[in-house]
Length: 415
Image 1 (spheres, helix red, strand yellow):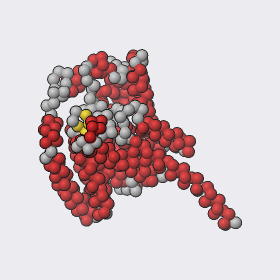
Image 2 (spheres, rainbow, N blue to C red):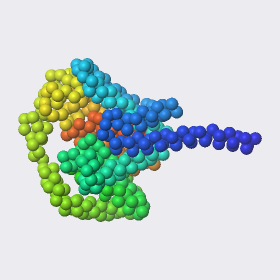
Image 3 (cartoon, one colour):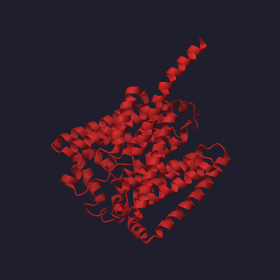
Image 4 (cartoon, one colour):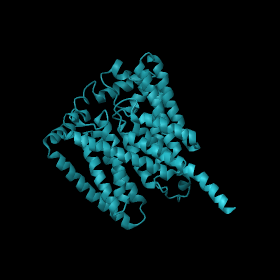
């Protein structure tokens, strides 16, 4: 009788294990496909549709803690849809709004799927992101140094590496998450893990540097310092803190040597001198980036329903807003603008509460939280509203906050 029960249990467990493995593979593919965004719909969208369908059919629950995320994303997209009615005859605008709704859905799915088998699913997804960052970096570096011959130009834009992305700025921003994952391996891993993480980090940093994205450079520097500080703060032993300090010191020296080696190449040094200044001609002037901020916010006050997606550069100014806070007000009216602003502030403030929550995924939580703060800050000087990796980071952060609530409740009051 006992043998029959055991056999039945194994028979039931086998399909469940197979389904969970399928889910994990799909999450890895979503993380990996995020590096290939050169057309719309991109491979990421195709993979995402399949993954969302599989998760929906095999079980996906939405925790009560995720309701604020759901509501704010709904408000944001209702704002987009309402503003779209003014220019609904433009097909590109309709497509833009539909893509926005889909990306919001991916954030909700990322958050919900972490409600079960959290550590394993998170591991699948982050490994996919790390593999994506590595491939995108290798392509970017090889193309920059013309290793693909005449095909190298496909992966460059204005002399800057863009890899498998449409824009060098997006490549640079995308690499921040995998670079921090590699950095975390150095901070918290054994010697062999730390060395492997160090090699990965150097490759990713080389590509990030060759994107010549000033915002991405700043985002990584800020997020890396924050990650190191959080890791140092939660370390329990003095020996761990000493190791973190040593790794940070050695890592900084090696990173500076890498930059120095790259700057020894004439074309790299010339473009670096051009990009490392804050007086670019497209930033200054009445209709420059910062001038458009003032004019755009003035226009925002007169248009509570917004002007519709893609209209800022088409009907009013010569360039896009390059400020996501402003762009959500323009594309989604006051409803969309305040929804995005609230979402950013609530996520940043609420997320800090979980920094000290002791969980198996605490190191990865630190990486995701630091990356979110970095990309949220970058959104003040660039448009991130269709960055796939932003919605991945947003969803994962909320999902980890939801499953970490019991650990938060166990924290001493002084923490």
